[in-house]
Every structure is written in structure tokens, then in C-alpha cells.
Image (cartoon, rainbow, N blue to C red):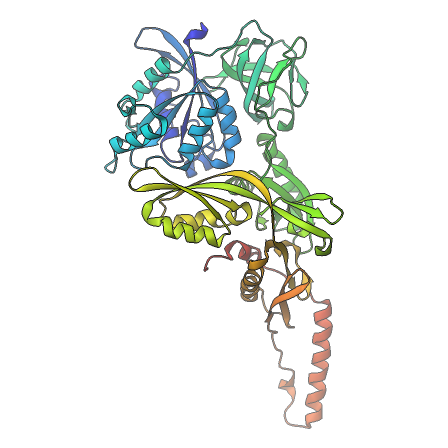
Length: 601
């Protein structure tokens, strides 16, 4: 088809503003999916995506549409993930488009993810088409919201489309707007092949399937190809388009979107953002913007039964085939035995991986408290990266510890500003500025250590604002901090899985809380179990789990006191020996206690 009749666009929105519903209606209007095959959230293939209403895995689909001007068009919809943890994938998907439909809920207005995605789209120089969705809701304020969007983008509120994706009102106008306003793809058909890999998935028969947008040149099924960042070479198993299922074709030209089945056995060889070219006479310069995705949050994942270790390893291997951003390595813990240290893009990503391990692979797992990657400068001026408190070197050898800081934006109604400021100050945050969106809504900008937001910050933000606030964050920089390792000793043995890296000011308060919680959770033994918190080499808090007492004097009826003393002495020696060789089993709740330390601040 003539390239002037191709349109590539994406839909961007905050979570739950109707992105997947609009995609469903577009598929129906263009006849891409028949009424018999149609189901809600059609492009969201995972059960988890449907339940949570969040797109986790991006997808693409080609729609054929006859416009009101009588011409036939190919419209490629490149769907994007819907959470801040997957910002890099969103930016790559947007790079494959010329336009973006910005969906804003008529009752909620602009929220954190809306703005974050708008800035990503503007960076890629895309044509933005604002759409006010859910206009049929009783609480809808389409005119007010259109004014908000006008202030943000400078596009006249009269030009904005008012639709209801659920009932289908105005959906056809969205397609017409895409054809009118989104420019056709540029690119040179005669130049050497350059195609952007904007996503991939693993197929057990075809290997890694790369989702590509051809920028320059042409791709034929018999070409020998290579990926420029990883230098991996291959001959395609097949090439094709999504319509919406995978449909094999012979070639893809500049401006088209499709897939290449590579035959690779791991996603590592075919990373998101890489450039695909010909092995012989290929392009010399890759497409800009490729970076390797780096995990932000780390946690230990252990099987609750030691026998399941190999099953957990196999499950992580299979998950990594579909998710190149998942990083893991084996680790051992005295308390939890064998497991893995796993790196995630963020807390939501960690939650999804945990849930998929439990659901799809039927595993019973235990995750330690999440931690971030610290930079440790030793006295010999060596820089170490530490992602687990257990790996922190001895305090005497450390010159300084640097922690990652984030820039955060909180969108909230005005009445909650005080509660949010209080929450952020408690978490060592620094105020930057306040922006007023309108008379009632503001954006608060802060800088805050990543370690302070990964455990319960989001939940507490939602509770102090009754669910009205939304949060967006980006990495800022590494900064030196007055940090110390908080060790927990149970029966005078340090438990590595309970260790934390905390601010020195918080060490006493957190140590005391954790010791008190563990005292309630650890079952009583036949001997006294001391629980201690130590910051550096100093014990800062202690509690005892009292012993269960066996009444050894029960069999003594009267008689000499020396006989009773003898029995008690014998019991004392036995308890001493038991304490030396006895081991204390820690219940799963003990590790969960780390996640709820700040609940009652």
C-alpha cells in the first residue's frame, strides 16, 4: 500500500481512564475482530491484566479502515503498558509512532501518568490528539477537563473529541482524527534496512518474536538479519503482521509495523529498543535512544519448601524469556536456605512477578523486604554496588554510602496538601515546588530517597488522600546519606534476611518496632529466646520471648528442699545446653513484619 495511507499511533492514558476499552471499540469499528471473537480488554491477553485493569505487556494490531473520504487506510495501533514502572517500554513504543491519542477521564481529569506520558510523546515529537472519555458518567465534567487539557497542551478545547468508549459514542471520530491529524510515516524505502524493536515475546516454536516498526528500507523473509546492540545474527523463521493474530507475509517496508520470529532462545539477544538491520550491506548507525533497562528494586525470593528450589529456578527462567528486564542470581540465606536475588523495575513489577510465579507455576514462595541498589565507597576508594543489606561490607571499611533519590510528582486535590507534606517529610523527602492545575487541584514536586517509597509510600499516600492522589516518579541521582545497617539477632545469631539499611536517625525507632513485632510472632521455645536489634556493632533494642516452663517439681510430694534444688539445677543445665544447640524456626510472618514497620507512625 502507498505509504501516504499508513498511520501509526498509540493510545496513552493514566491507569483506568479507558485506554483498553477504546482499543476494543476501534477493533470493532474497523471490523478487525468479529463480534463472535470479541471480549473485553481484547489486547490484554493475561488474566492478571484483566483483573487489575492495567496493561502489563504491550501489543500491536493492524486495522484496515475506509475513511469518509472514500480512501482505504492501514492504521497500526501500538498499545503501551499502563504503569510508571514500564516507562522505558512506553518510550520505545511511542518512538514507533507518528501520533498519540491522549485519553483523559471526564470525571478524573489529568493525573500523574497522563502528564508523564504526554511529556514522553512530546519528546518523540508526536502529534497529540486529546480525547475526553466517559462523557456519559453522572460525575463527568467534560468542559472543565477540556480546559485543563487546553492549558497543558495549548490545543483549543473546542477541537477536543468527546467520547464514551464503553457505549461507542464518538469512536468513529477518533479514527477520522487519526487519519486527518497524524502524519504518514517518513523513511527512505531505498536506504539500508533499519527497524526498531519496540517489544518482544517468547514462542516455544518460533523462539523470540520481535515486534518491529520498519523505519527505513525493506525486510524480506529470506534476508539474513542482525541486531546492532547485541550483534546477534539470524535468518527469520517468519515475518508477518498482527491482524490481530499473527499473520505471515513476505515482506515489510518502511513505515510498516509487524513482527519477526528470530528463533532465539532468550530475550537477552533481542532487547527492546534495539535496531534490526541486514547482516550484509546493513545500516551503519543504529536508531537513537537505546538503553539497557536497569532494575531499581531488589528482593530475595525463596521457596517455602526447599525441595521446590529447582522449580522456582525453572519458573524464573521461563518468565525471563518473556521479560528481559527481569534479572536474577542465586543466593543463600542462613534463615531461608537457597533462593534467588531478583531485580525488578519497580514495586508493581515485583508484585506482578510474584503473582505470576504463584499462579502460573503453582509455587509457594516467600519474598524478603524489597531493597534498592546502594553505592558504597570504601576507605581504599573502591566503589561497590550493593543490592542486599547482607552484602554490605564491615562498617569500619566504609567511607560513605550513596543512595538513589527520585523526583516525584503528586497530583492531589488542594485539601490534602498538609497530609501529603507531613507524609513526605517523615520519609526524608525534600520539597521542590507546587504547581496549581486549576482552582482545586495541584501538583506537588519533591525529591525523596527511593528506599523510602518502595515499601508502603503509595498505600499511605492513597489512604491520607482517600484515594484521590496519584503519583509519578523518575530517577534523579545518587546522594551520600547517613546510612547504617540494622541487624536483627535471634538467639544471638544474626538473621541475614531480616537485615535492613536505614537512616541512622530511624535505626533506634525501626529496630525497636521490629523487635517488638518479632517478639509477638516468634513461637515460644523451651528456652528463653533473646531478639536484638544492632546498628553497626551496638545493640540498640532487645526483647525476650519467654520460655515454656516444664514443671519438674510436679513429681515431688513433700520431702527435703535439697531434692527440689537438685531437680531445678538439672533442668537449668539442660536448658543451657538446649539453648546452645537449639535452633529457632522463624515463621513467614516474621519476614512480612518488615513491610509493615511504618503502619502506625
